[in-house]
Amino acid sequence: MDGGTLYSIGELARRTGLTVKTIRFYSDRGIVTPADRTHAGYRRYAPEAVARLALVRTLRELGLGLDMIRQVVDQELTLGEVAAEHAAALDVQISILRLRRAVLTAAAEREPTPEEMELMHQLATLSEAERRRLIDDFLDSVFDGPRSDSRFAAARRSMTPELPDNPTDEQVRAWVELAELSLDPDFRATVRRLTEDHAADLPDGFPAPPRPDVVAVTRDLVGPVVASGISPDSPQADPVVTALTAQCALAHGRPEGPTPHRWLLHRLEAASDPRRDRYLQLLALINGWPAPDPLAPVIDWSVTALRARAAR
Image (cartoon, rainbow, N blue to C red; front, side):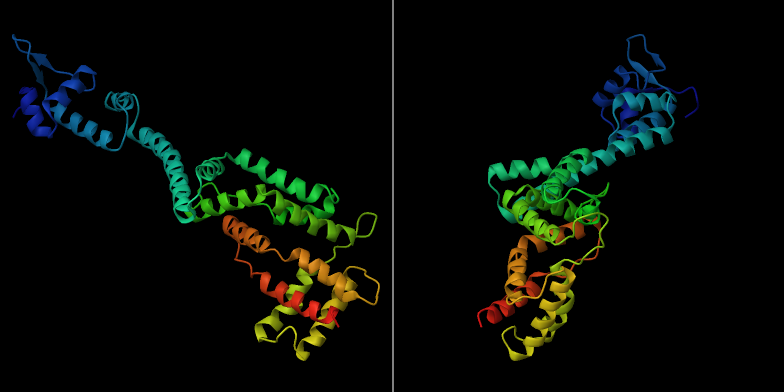
């Protein structure tokens, strides 16, 4: 057809695959305008309306609104500008959908009560600032009581989750579980007691040289023993327990006494909480750190060994 040919709305519908009703709607909204009308008032469209409607259809399938589409076809906005703006909006929507999916997946695994479901949703949709306040409140309750100085700054940082801008579903589920754990008063009290025990061993004055925690000493010394399969109540465990007690006492400035096993036993029993392992596992997942080795097997071995010898 030559350039002077005009299409009826029916012919335009056949050429574009759109319905007459849809083309009429776009025409009424000023997105595609008729080039002329017949004496009877029927609309006639120029050939370029076919390409214009093809673009409109593509943009609608991509989810753009009519106002933005009109700006594109009227060349008020470039396709690049629109694509960038729409992609940014989609990023937000995708993030929201991923959070919802993560919560629903976690709920399917845990079968929560309605109240727990609401809490999970709230925790998953917190802003970065809100997440920071929640964790700061937890860490304040753990560290500020025993001694609120920079001696605990490194430990505090090592317990701080940093959810990335584009977390995976697994990281979102880990965040929800970690946040729930940090809100647990009993877990807070347990971690606070561990911090208080460690603070009690620090000398007065500042600065002070860092001292390894008894759990760290136990992990390094007993870990290979547990891996080797030595039973905690066997004679082969005697030198391990002696070395463990001596190293922990030395690291924490404990004077030699008749019952060194009982002091260390008390400290390790206080640290024997599977929620501590779980918090560290979740923390590593959220922060993208290597998964830590579980501490429970090492602590359980040491507690059993110390109990056996304390009873002698």
